[in-house]
Length: 326
Image (cartoon, rainbow, N blue to C red; front, side, top):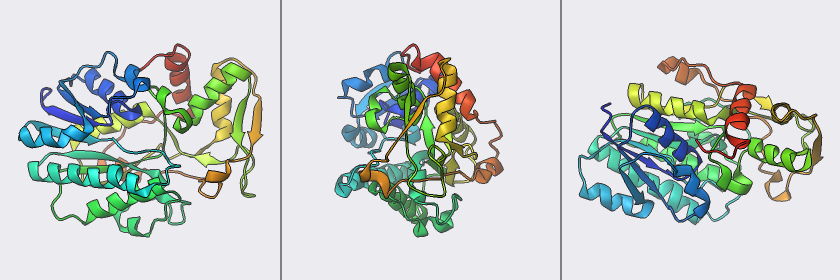
């Protein structure tokens, strides 16, 4: 795609959106429309030094697009209400379903390729496995309202006869990395572990309330944000078959492994304290997630993913220790 074609990034002030903007800049793309609610001062650092063409409030994006037909050439829809403890489904529906439907319809009518953020939260307890097949999405049972909203839009998208010329729904697994300083409770376990160890010399992990897993032995597919960005860029430039794609590493790792890697990068001995999983999320807690990555590999993506240790080393040494942004 030519470097000066306009690319929209929604959720641009957030974690993955701001990192994607930086990655696009590195690849020579600067003609970017940043769309978000830019009112949060906590996110200001995420966009410092980024190159872009326009900065538009998410609520004004629709009007801008309608009054500038033919201008947008690619669309990354990463903006969403991502709080997994949010119980107001009307709010989630407005931000995660209805807004996404407008994005889809606009991209379909204007023939704009679209990559949008789905979530591994759609898989629930994994009763139906972690295969990114469009055939199973109607049977998935997300454990929280956020996951329900993401799955509802996936079901709607797959059913559409009118679609963008290329589209990919990315089911993000446990993404961690720079530019998540603003996320507070919803920041990654790596981020929280780093700050706890720096402050107290210990890290607190959730105790297992499932006899099949030891304390700290809960397993997740942790993926470094730089791998997410590389996949996004590859999809934009190669546009393989449209559909739903998992985006994890394909290798589940334990929270204990994660904590050990953070301690190691701080040159400190391991000291883990186990605490009860909060009651408000205990019955919605995933004990195991692991992305089946065969579909993305079959589409042609061949780059290696960061291991958990490699990703944490890069995150801690290049960003967290110095408080830097990507």
